[in-house]
Image (cartoon, rainbow, N blue to C red; front, top):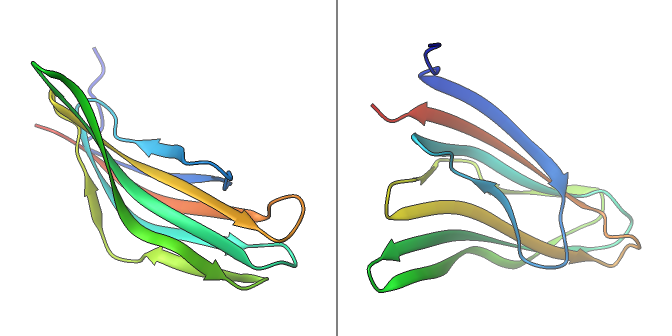
Length: 126
């Protein structure tokens, strides 16, 4: 059986949706460290973006979900970018909780021209 790597670096990229969209969730058996998260306005219009930390907790009484705001409705000028996280954010996954990142936004450009880039270190829980 092949061993899982201790550390894995990931880059997640995509287009920001107008609805809250889960863009990254921690894998089973790993703790994820978000090293960097940037949202760019690549169109001619001003963008507005929101980023949330989502924690889903499971217990005997059921499942609960909590969204914690990292940044809410931040304005991003055309042809510019916003460094939402340029430090570290730890995301966990255990038997009772799962953490993820949720992003939403809108741009005055048609179609929506907001793009995100996330740099992540996934480290194996030992």
